[in-house]
Length: 183
Ligand code: ATP
Ligand code: MG
Image 1 (spheres, helix red, strand yellow):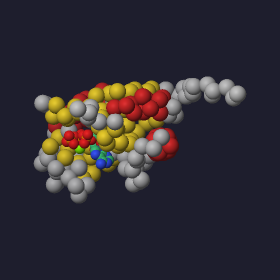
Image 2 (image 1 turned 30 degrees about the vertical axis):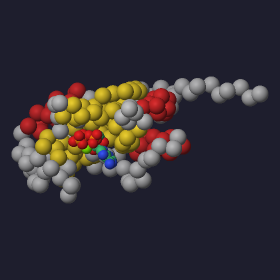
Image 3 (image 1 turned 180 degrees about the vertical axis):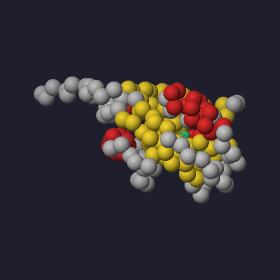
Image 4 (image 1 turned 180 degrees about the horizontal axis):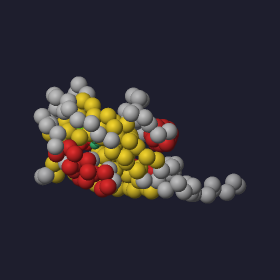
């Protein structure tokens, strides 16, 4: 029997300093859908979908090669898409965010991973299957300090994300493996 593939995505994890006030704020909203579990709050950068387990090492190397520019996000727009996704989005994007998504997509494509070509839309999903946009305002400052590769797993208590790679966005130069000597 072959091993099942992993279901993977690169994301920014929601820092605890944001998660706690954000969940307290969300609890006060009248939400007519299914809230995302507090532990699962994140901002997806690139969704990979099913990936053979044998390719995990390639993705870990790729994650380590990404730029490490830290940045600040301001989630200040509460929106509802027609597909029922209630989310917070930043009204302005710090340049480092689309730049990180671009670097990920390029590197993934170069390694023959299938990536989306749709325009990146930064959003933090708060709840799914919603029909009504709650009347509320928000402005959460989110210091993005970590890039994470998650495996999405279905368990008895619902979907669980397991971090299989973590890289700090600490402003350090990315250390690359030395080039192989030319013969
Ligand atoms: P579940 O689907 O089990 O209810 P989930 O949506 O949180 O839970 P996944 O479907 O594994 O878990 O998705 C992980 C992340 O990838 C989420 O941010 C989700 O919105 C995003 N995602 C899932 N499918 C796609 C897709 N086809 N294109 C872009 N992003 C996707
Ligand atoms: Mg899903």
